[in-house]
Length: 232
Image (tube, rainbow, N blue to C red):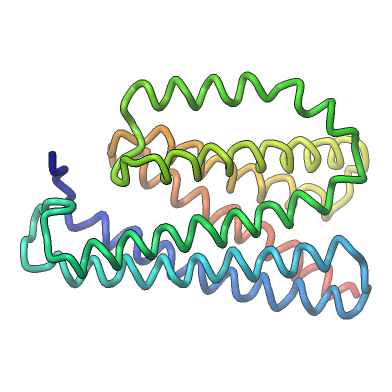
């Protein structure tokens, strides 16, 4: 059955992903700049991770802009998956490419912490994360791409970012440095983005909060990298 999608969905999401791509490019630039200066393993993984994540945002923003112009003819509401085959192919291909590149980026980010803390402490809370997400699936959320790939993407992203957040929070509580706080805040916001997207029954406030959380997380990480590069 088709789902009605208001036109603002593509306006808001397109603007968000374009801004995310711009901030992501700056993040990638400053991360590589820092890595070239320090040569540290952590900065290397961060730089490559942001490159993959940014590539995903570029592809996703292009797909959403295409969707916006394609849906203009049926304003104010349009039916998802009841359009021309090219539209369906572009939208789904764009989203799947974003899922793939983002997961590569998140895995690279998690690798920066693999030797810094015992992993078994983190996996003790994993059943709770999985239980929450499975309950979400049972409630029939995950709009608008209500398919297995979308569900698995956010599940895996939540799990990986939960591990990253566990480490960033621990680092902040132990070190309490100027850099550890924006890093912790940034990944908390990005993790919240995936969690809120998983809980979205297409209520505007939840959808909007998820995307604003994404931008807040990226800006927080960018602020940290700019400050580090200035001091370096």
